[in-house]
Each structure stands twice: as C-alpha cells, then as structure tokens.
Length: 404
Image (cartoon, rainbow, N blue to C red; front, top):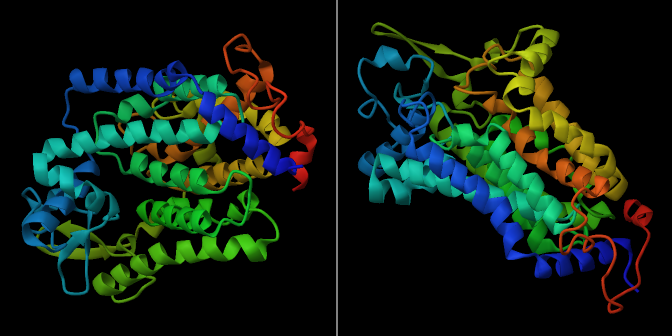
C-alpha cells in the first residue's frame, strides 16, 4: 500500500492523464487571447520597452553587438537621463544595474527580430507561466478547479497589464513557479528533481533579488528526513549563487557587492555612486497600507483577485500544511520587504514587485474552488481526492497528508 504522499502522487498522475483539453484551453488559451488583444491594441500606446524594460534590452544589445556589459555606447543620449538606472563598475564603466539573466535568455529572439523579439519573448514567458502555474495548482485541486483559478488569475490580476512589456517580474515568476513544479510532488528524495528545483529557485533569486526571501522556507516543500532531500536542493542553489558571486566580483570587486550597491547617479559630467539600500526607509505601516489601499497601485484596486485568493490558504492547509505555510511565509516576507521600499509605486499599473504573490495566489484560489465545489458538475472534478475506479491503492484520509 502507498503512503499518504504516494496516494496523492498517484491521483495527481491520474488527474494529469485525464485532464480535458478544454481545461487546458481555459487555463492557457483564454488568458493568452487577452494577452494577444492587449498587444494588438498596443495597450496604452506607449512603447513596450518602458521604464526598466529598456535596460534589459540594452544589455542584450550590448552582449550581441559589443560582446561586453559596457552600456555607454548603447544608451540613448543624454546620459543624464539614465541616472540611477545603470551602475558603475570598478573600471569606471556604465554597466547594467538590473540582473542580466533575462537578457541572456532572450538573446536568440532579440538577435533574430531586434526589439520586437523582446515582446515575443515576453508573450512566450507569459504562456509558459500559465502552463507552470496550472501544473502547480493541479497538485492541490481538481483539473477544472486549477484551470479556472489560473484563468481568473491570468485575466483579472495585473498580468494582462504586463503583456505589452519586456517584464523581468514575469521572468522571475516563471523561474520561481518552475522550481516549485520541479520539486517532487510526493516529497520524495529524488536527487535529480531536487537539484533542478534548486537551480531554478537560485536563478529566480538572482534574477529578482527580493526572491531570495522565497528560499528560507523551502524545507517546508521537501520531504523528511532533510538529510536526504536538502543536499541536492542546496547543491542546485549553489550553481546560480556561484554565477552571481563571480559576476559581482568581476564587475564590482567583491562577491557581496551588487549592482544595486553601485548605482550611477549622473549629474552633468560627474558620476556619483549611490546604493539603493537607502531607498528602504519608509514607515512600514505606510507601505502596508499603500500596497493594499492605494487607488493607483494597491492590490485592492488593481488585483482584487489576489486578496480573494488568500481565503484559500485554509483549505490548502487542510490538504498540504507545508505548502500553505510556505506560501504564507513567502507572501509575508515579500510584502513586508517592499513595505519599507520608498519606490514601491514604480509600476505603470498595479504593483509589479508583488507579482510573485499575485501569481502564486492562484494555488490557494484553486484549493478554495475545490473546497467550495462550485464546479463539481464538470468532468474529472473528483480526480484529486478519490479514485473513480476500483484500480490502484485504496483511498487514504487527507489528514494523513500532513504527517509524511
């Protein structure tokens, strides 16, 4: 007889095998049509390489044309327009302030299509995010409930507002969700999957530094004993950490000095080094209130589905206490981190810094829909919890899931 986690993994495999093509269409096809419509009308008429996006593109162009990270000849003039948006390395060169990893992944499309390649890349990563989020949500709900949750998140959260974009926030979310999907669903000590998961989590963190906050609670998603599951995960994490440290040492002379510690403030012909650490100092309650209640950027007005989804943390905890606790701790860490950040409003719509919360909130939303049972009439609705035939191992009470 399989244990509790083995039972869950068994039913997840059967659910995936029987998932209706229509449920995939709902989860991925419907939001993608919305994304395509946003691109077709060019969103608000402004360039898609807006704000920080252009610097990821400049980095890609510099790598393609100059084979270096010196952006001085790639930036539009005058250079004072790029004050605080680039960094100064130890040799006095203007180098990327923003992590270079999305630019590296987008190189083939930008080489092939130029600037439109960045937009194509953005659409592809959005579609991939929908697919991965559907796979993840299906671990904690029926196929249809997970598809409905992803469709609602894909259409009504801030995601459509970042279809006309070259978004590093979407890129880091893809890596984060991919890491969670790579983890063994049954919490087994699968060395290969744990190593891949660690690699993806590490890439997510070095692509968006705030996602380092998603790492400490990872043991909650791993099986026990930790001496069997954690070494492979940590080994995977060390690969991006080594790349990150080597790049910091090459550009800034220390593995612990990042581009955000060497921001170039350009005042005429004078360049002054500035650290973004000084931007973290607003009263935390002001940041908390703003990130929820602000009419232009607060979750309540720009992504209410995210707040509604949090109601699903309780039914998720009944199914998988570790996953629910991981999400709660990660959500709180990211939210509170940006509650101290003076520039948390720096988004053209909503709060892009909270995009990991908006995306991962689809998981408790799926668990909520599954618990409420509004869509129990749909085919395959019972696949998560109870086998529909007499084959396979006998059912195990869900309470046992929390004990393994």
